[in-house]
Every structure is written in C-alpha cells, then in structure tokens.
Image 1 (cartoon, rainbow over the protein chains, first blue to last red):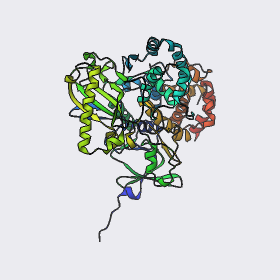
Image 2: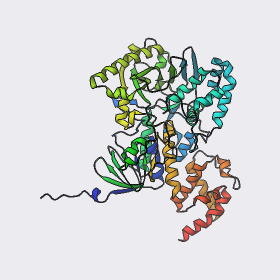
Image 3: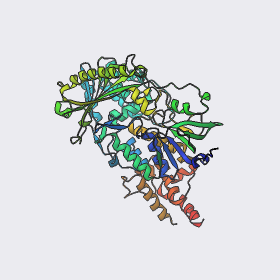
Image 4: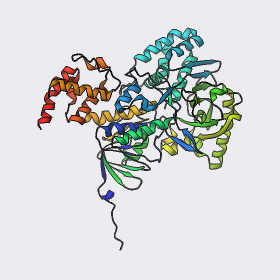
Length: 474
Length: 86
C-alpha cells in the first residue's frame, strides 16, 4: 500500500487578507494600495506575463504592445485633481515613474473632413470652428456640460450619450466624429455609449490627452510590479483559478488549477464579471442579467524601415471612418474595414531613438467568426487582412508597402486566449458595476467591468475598489 | 505629545502622499482641502498613514475632525497620548 504524503499547502491553505485574480493594471494597482497599508495580499495570474488586456510581448527580438496605443488622461503636473495626479498620490508614485512623453497631435478623419486635436483643447475648438462653423457655440456648450459633469460618482444613472449630444449638436457628422475616438477607446456598448462613460472618455482623450512611455506599456507594468513587490505583495504567475468556493453567500476558498487551495477574507477579481461569476462553485445561483461584452478588435502591426514622420505621416493616432455615419458594432464579417485606428508610437515626442518604428491599424472584429476558423482558414484570413492593411497604409503614407520589414497581428481569438475575457471583449460588459459589488458578499470586481476606462482608469479602478471595500472598512 | 508635534506629523504625512504639494505656508486654521486641493481619497490616506505609522485609529465618523491642522492637533493629540501610554 502506498502511503500518501499530503503537501503542507493542502492541509493548511495559505491565508491572505485579500486575494486578487489577475495581474493587470487594476489588480496590480489594488495590490499596491493594500500591500502598502500592510495587508497580506496575493495576486494570482493565470498567464506567464503580467498586464492582462494591456500587455506586451517580444517576437524575433522585436517588442510589441497589446492594447496600449496611448496613455489617455495625460494632464500637466499642476492639475492636482486630474486622474493621473490622483493615481500618483494613491500609489505613492511620481509622474517620472511613468516616463511619459506627450503626443504632438492626433486626428479624426471622415470623408472630406479632418479634426485635429492635441493635449490642448483649444486646438480642437478651433478645428470644430473651421470644419463646422455653425456648431462653434454648440461645441462650447457641450464642453461646459462635460466639464461640469461628475463622471466618477459610483451611482450614476444610465443615459444615452447620443441623446445628450442631439440636444446640443445639430450637425450629425460632428456627433459621429466626436463619438468615433471615444467609442474606439472604451465603449463596451455597440451603437451608443453611456453618457457617464462618454464624459470620462471625452475628458481623458480630448480635454486631457495622449502620452506614451518610450518603451510602451511594459514601462508601466514593470514599474507597478516592482512597486507591488517592494510593498511586500505576493505575486504568483501561471497560477490560474479553477474555482471560487462560495458557501452561504461568501467566498470560502479559492481552488487553483494545481488543486491547491488558498483562503482570503476578501477576493478581488479583474477577470470580468461574467467570467468571475462563472468560476463560483454555486454558479447555478447566477442571475443572467449582465450582458456579456462583444466588442473586440483585430490589430495588424508593421515594423517600418523609417519612422512614419520621415515618410510624411506625423499624427500619433488617426481615427478614421469612411462614411459620414460611424457604425460602432460587432461586424457580421471577420473584420469591419470601414473604420479603425492607426497608431504610430514613434510620433510621440521623445521617441526619435526608438529602434523599431511601428505602424499599427486596429479594426472592429467578430470573435465568433475568428474562433470558428480552422488553422488553415485562420492563416488565410490573416494573410487576406494583411493585404487590407497594406492598402490602408498606402492611403496614409503613399509608397507604404516597400517600407515594411516585419509584420505581426493579433485577433479576438488571441485576446481571448491570453486574457481569458469571453469573446475577446476588450472593454468587457456593457453593464458596469461601478461599486464592484457582486452577489457574493466578499467578492468584488475591479478592472474593465468596474468601468473606469483607459490605462489610468484601470489603475484607478483597482485603487477605488481597494479603498471602498477594504481600506475604509477597518 | 504636543499639538505642534501633531501638526508636523500631519504635514509629513501629506508630504508622503503628495510630494509635489507646497507645504511652506500652510495655515493652521484654514481647511486643508481648500489650501492643498485635497480630496476624500487624500483624507483616507492621512487616516491610513496614521494607522500604519503610529497605530492611531480614526473612525469614519470622525474624518471631519481632520479638516484643518488645528482641528487635527486638537483631535489627535489625546489619541497619540493614549497610544504612547498603552
């Protein structure tokens, strides 16, 4: 008879004050807050890389970002109530830790019209007055509404952004042009967005603006991991959660993929609301009231032999739409080529020394379509998209194709595989849970499905949930 | 502990939270919120730092006692004494 030795971790599970599922921006930020204030914290990350929806990878010695085109919410140092300033204070970080360089400008391009914007709203105001002279005052009134709206309150009522815009802006093309960048950078909802989300995006993109660390998102992620560890937080990689044991409405333990159990007084999850509730042992109790997010993207990336600005393309980001109506929805086909986002990281200030000059195009894509392809069809679909990518590149930089020295691509399928988010949904569910609560008493959602947006928003999401449900509760 | 010492402790904590804040001319009797553009997140941090560094507890219903440096000193000095005595 074989005598079995129980591993010590089986008989006495590790106990933490807080366990956090996911080492993305929100989980790491929550972890820093909690560990700094002497909580015993453990972050459980399924993947071997940190970052979640904002991660990075290296292929053939070349560095790529997933997700990040721009850090939004870039505000000057003296604006103390700006989200970036709040975040720095909350995480005991300085602006220098983010090593960000501002954009010069970006553009919204529709047929026959272009609105240029920068980190100074006066530039967009002038552009609106130039392209839409009769909307000049209306736009000013909209700015006032946006500035005065409190978008960070946790109990805002749902309100259609299109409805509010119709009340202020008479020209539907201007409405579409404003919605285009704001939806692309954060809307989990198709066709319309919630007005609170609209205001958050408007402030972070158009009133504040874009910046980027020279080395991309890895600078931020690595800095967060360093900070978290220096505060005494524990980080376990390749450590997926198999099940959250719920008993009597509270989390009793977490079972890891390895079979090991851990216990925690409080559990945060950045895995998404739907995904997290699916892990609960009593998932039959779930009320299927939250729609599952469907907005996903395909991104094609080229390394060029010269910087785009040397080839005559100076915008950091271009949001394009090929008609006067902007249709933000999951396409029926693999990809919707009619609109998209072009990102040129080296068009930010201070990026002249960057070795690889990237040109990235992001389009709306259909997860189910991509996921149904067999390997051969998947490769063919990618090859076909590469041809579309070259055409789009040519439209922005004439003579584009000969400058390509390397290409890569990720699809909704890639996103689903690496982040675990259902449908490869980059912005999560259209329904946000701003206070992070779930039907399980000590289980809270942070990150995408909590609803603060962008990189700075993701980190503030973790901070907010940590403050609300742990630090202010003692 | 004297009230002056408590004020210095509070200013040191604010310096940790917001290294860029100008603390050279903070008025003792004016709301910190207004002088230093602080918000409720910052006040939570003062409370948390007091606990972390000095084991001084400030219950939620007393947060408004931290409005000014003067009120901080009056409210916290006995608490510091109590912790020191225990």
